[in-house]
Picture 1 (cartoon, rainbow, N blue to C red):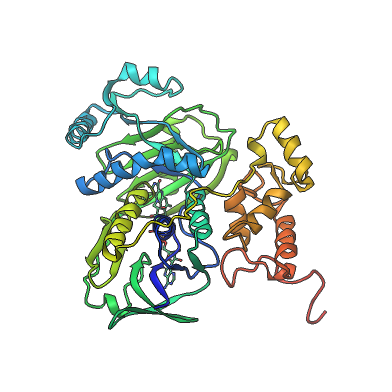
Picture 2 (tube, rainbow, N blue to C red):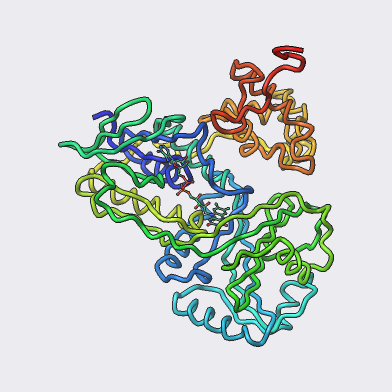
Length: 465
Ligand SMILES: Cc1cc2nc3c(=O)[nH]c(=O)nc-3n(C[C@H](O)[C@H](O)[C@H](O)COP(=O)(O)OP(=O)(O)OC[C@H]3O[C@@H](n4cnc5c(N)ncnc54)[C@H](O)[C@@H]3O)c2cc1C
């Protein structure tokens, strides 16, 4: 056997499972087709940590509740930005009062703690900067906001430091059952292992042919705006505005001083309809504050952790759900328990549950900055002025365990190029540092995937004039 456990897919799920399993004495590898882990987590580095109140399904709500409880300990030991903010779920019209009451009663049955039904006057007290009238709402205390890239990368780094082998740029082509365990074929290798944990969305492997495909439940469309720090509304909570047309608007203060406003709808809503609805809440949104606009599909299928074949050594994590970040710590622990029981393995006595130190210049005091610069002068050279990211941080992001090799990898790990200028002033400098540190040509550095070159060729290098 090449490995005890092969984890397929290096998204948040794969990295979290790798971390949990690295606490045991196992020979583990993770296979990811992209250049970096956690490529598809989120459009911006912000995810809401739900508490189970909003989910349509009791079982998914339970996974949210269990996952939610892990976040304080997890984020504090990994130094991942996380803040419990609480959510105000609000209704504007009398006709929507029933929706609130149903939601509240369901939450009580689910045993969700620290929630309250609010009349309009209390809403103003809790969120005084909301200049709009609501007929009522629900306050729920334990929701929060996390930086999901940081979480996935932290999981990955600690797993890597504890011996998990990460095989990046390697695509799984097939998984077959063999007499003792599995054979996993990639575009580069063939591996034998006792247990496969498959977190990739692929359905076409030999092992899956017999299995039923999960129905992907289509919910609708989502449009997002990312508003920069000049859109000052000083909101202390996540807001969720509901109505009976199966539309909701979410307003999420991010941990990077910006605000996300998202509208979910079953209909294919237009940009103008979206903007009009938001303008009703926040009069006159200055379009200069819009840093980014995204739109996409919004799916909610149930998450399925299919361990029905665990006796043979196969576990599949399937489903697409808007609250998977919230559920992941719990799902990873569950899967780990199943594997440990199956293989009857022992704890890894050398396991080190500590992430290697790093410095975030913009969070340091003047004294700390002086101290760090005196140790390494590269921390004295700012590369991204909008986000105050230094050359020292970029070099560290490259040299760390599972270090960045792409422009996106640097952006995610350091926050560089996410500011007002969106990288206009720093992308070239970051590429130059990446090229120097990885011993590559400037023109070989990619944005994220194989064919995503950022700089095509040197200026004035033409085939013909
Ligand atoms: C826009 C957006 C907003 C979200 N907001 C929230 C939120 O606010 N709160 C919340 O709780 N959750 C949120 N989520 C959900 C959450 O971010 C994702 O569902 C979660 O990151 C999925 O992680 P995963 O590891 O299961 O899947 P993925 O991230 O899809 O990971 C699967 C990995 O497998 C790799 N892979 C695929 N095929 C192969 C192959 N053949 N060989 C090798 N590797 C392969 C892929 O490259 C990928 O890295 C959001 C998701 C999106 C898209």
